[in-house]
Length: 577
Image (tube, rainbow, N blue to C red):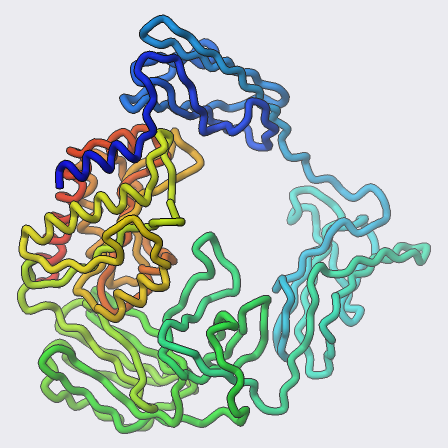
């Protein structure tokens, strides 16, 4: 194993001779570059043992030969001479030129025209009665502006526009009589002489009119709801996963996402590809929750209630008060639903509620803080399967899932040495597996070799395998190689915070900078509720100091030891939570 790790580390780092004066820059990518941000970086790699000077500054060179420096540029041209001095007296110089032009200060439109319009929601959109359109338009100041159905727009005071005149805004609520036919929304600007400037929206809009509700059903149990149809690099923020064949009321569309009404006061979005709309269209059922059952078997506790159809649901957890909360949208709770417990070990009580007229709420109180749960349908019975805290809280008595991030055609981040995240995550994960198994633990992994595994397949694998804990191993990255570094953990659900906190606290003992234990993170493997999970962003591969550490086998071993200690701390705490 030790020999394998040494080979991996060597393969991660392209060889650069010790004596030659060499220079490879990662930032900037060209010798002459136009930039609109005054903060810029010069970062790269030279020969090990070489000295680097940038103009009159001597730059620290790490043992890996990497370096990074930050500069605040003045407006205009800035020149830098990057000089490398090798131990054998050889030198090499590379000249760089930055041209910094700050973004122009916004000014009022000087001629009679419309500069731009921004309409929300954006994209090609289908709307329903009651939906709200909002607009912001910039044009010639002091004019009459109007848009949809000739509704006037108001010119905003300069106190709300950064001192710029000619910014107009407004909103419009879709009415039953509106009949947009996949057309552009036109905005008009009229002056006192009767001249008119017109500009159309970049997207097309239509209004959905259905005599009966437009419905669809989820295609499988990997179907998820999102808070919006857009998001960051990880995609839209996921609300939660649904089981197969859940009935959804579709009330609109934005690009490739359907907008769905979960209940009278709650909407969400779902990818169009995850909904089957080729189903009989009929009036939505009235569903009264009845025939509640609460029981336990030799492994899990359960709560189940009958509905007239498979309705959408959302859930959350309250860690300090030891509760799981399930909202069944579109359902009405029958009075006197059973709260009788039969052979449950983790569930201590059940409460049924109706927070809004068409949402049935189930509050499950537990003996311990939540350890995990699954929501699914058995015919039209919705069931919550509650995972019990393991009877023996030691590594030798639990199953731990390990996910080495990236792999194959998905390399992840690359450090200044050329080290690649996918290789280092696998190296760390295999070391972690070895250490956990020495402690008697059982480990399952999403990959054990250098190959590509889609994130959806990783998620599906772990949800089926249902380990007691899941650890996803990654290395962080930033465009700022100087000021951004350190170790971090990320989680989404509240019940996963204690596991992440315990691991993060131990990782700080390595001497790495604290980059936080971060909640509400939208990574796909943070989304399951079946088990506590931790996304461990061990350190920043983009930072030369952090990269220097992770390429040292001794530091790799220290990191995995601290992760194991963090898991042990979590298991000890679980007995009293």
